Image (cartoon, rainbow, N blue to C red):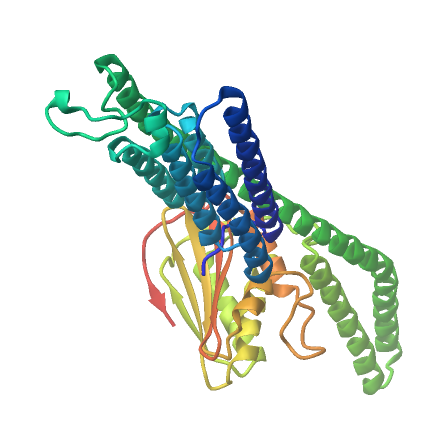
Length: 453
């Protein structure tokens, strides 16, 4: 059963206030009819009025119990308001019909429906209110109407028309039918404009939620950047000193003719120092701060081919590359781009069998560059797929990942006017697509060649 597209707390508050409004209506109507009967001396149908008010009170209790039991489904709001429209119609019919000055109360229910419910419900309830109001004009007059001198036989109008406005003169009848038409027009205006306002408020709320999410993501990224920058700063100086000392030692041993195994050990130390520097670079790149890496223009196909070759050299996984824009060049930080695409391939390889190839597809439309990685692995449940882009969330076993790959890939893509989209089906595989704005990456398309490898 579909529920109203709002937070549970919001719908609970709205329904609580709707019930309070109904209790207020029951009390107000009771006081009003008691005052009219005592002060104006009008003979009202007490039994009918008491029955209506009692039914409204009992239904309020029932709706409160149902709300606590099943929450706030969309139809519950609609049923409550529809019931109120029907009860109001019976009350108006029993106490004067179209002559009753409180027929405007229909508009209260229409406004509530337009504010709380989706447009289709609001239009449906507005139509129900109009039909109920119109029905009062054609039904035979009630006993209360006769006591007020309203609605006797209108044989002079051309037949035995027993209607509530049969006795009214021409001007009054035109006035009452004008009220019905005005009610219809007013209802349409209310539903139309309130629905537009609600849509605008909904879009504004979505924008605020998106900005809040981006701010939270930025704060997390800033924390990662601070941690990575601190680590890089603390380790870069001793690593540089080790590299210099190892170099001097290597040259001294060469001049002194030291044993070959000592020379190999010194060379090994220097290689490990370079490895540590690369790890520091990757750490700062993971934090979104690529250590001052400059923007470079490169041929997209050549970069993807390099990523493919490097990955296949390190992993026993076949990559099928399909590039639909062989001659496109883009301007991006190359090492960062290399790392985030490699991270997507690594995720796919770890979720798939080594015998199953990964597909890397590059394409572009009018506005965006698309880099898609497809695997035929285990896939993910919907809840995991939603959380997959959050930092430090991972479905991998302990020690195989920190849960930053997708988060950082999305962050880089968003910096260049794009984003990351992921589709995953449990047991069938996952498709991850990086989008970059063609304008933001300075894309230049020289031809539209296609290459499969």
